[in-house]
Image (cartoon, rainbow, N blue to C red; front, side):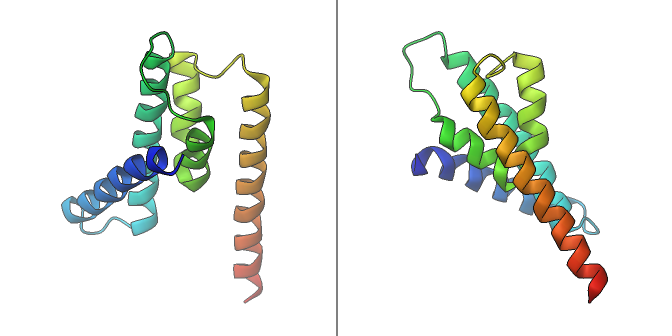
Length: 116
């Protein structure tokens, strides 16, 4: 699973660094989110394209990990555009857990930030 996750992750990091060079005032977090969203969208699209062939597929754990590290919007977009992983209930449940964890972390971050 790790190699399937590392390549898109490195591409997203390079994309974020390029965005920060092109747009000097762009926040690092925003650059990361834009980049990982695009890479996740493309990765889910690639997996959908290979779903009907004998080519190597992306493991679900790698797809979920990409969503977890910030690519949730890209994952949701690709699910809508490519109709990918929309019928597989076990994947949908895991994806929902990723969303709940992310929302909890965001709420916790802002709650702690307001307290300090």
